Image (cartoon, rainbow, N blue to C red; front, side, top):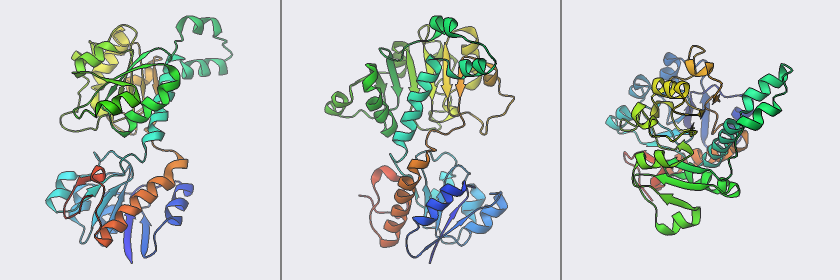
Length: 328
């Protein structure tokens, strides 16, 4: 029996799905409080770690005896101690593309919520304030806007597809440029630099991973490049943006508004000054958290584990730390 451990205290409906799809010959243990001590204890004899929101710390990885794979449910692996896993020869994989549509829908939701000031009007209507005339002067179309995508992976490409009906112009920047045929199919135009991208768009949506190179990539200098009235959407990782600089840009009018699903520190503290701004729409890192998609991600994760057991190759897009894995 191969043992899988999961550190996230999932809701009952999610747990039910994870257990119902468990492959034959595998067991699953889900942490209770997910303290560091508990994670170390249950992971020490595990064959697989099914990672999610809860960090997979140095101590957890160091205490394992036979882990064959750390499998992330989703794409972001910044909460896994990659260096320690690499040093111990433990492979790390993601489920590339599995959350793409869910997050892409969240991106479009935030664009619309920001432009139509949805939380603001909802709050005021519940207080008896009918703001129709005020919104006529303040609400904006998404249709016809120029959208910039910083990063052009699975999620950004799904955003392109969803925006088709809004007649937007789409620009993008990525260190890896797809073939012209794919650009044409998605209706996206390449920008030669991040700076040019920012200066050219009405909406910038962040879609790059958090790395040493991308931490605070959007800083005060880049925020000053936005044209008047531009908005910023972030569903990637909070630390890609310098939050202090973002707050300043949102208060001095450099940036008109922002829609944020991710933050430098999570869960978000009530002391965070961004919460005091009415031109910010916030959600709790829920872009990929869609019940409809749990089974899809679970099957992908379990499928990678079965491949490891059988000595079969994993998709190159899924592999973060290769270790002894074979690659398709």
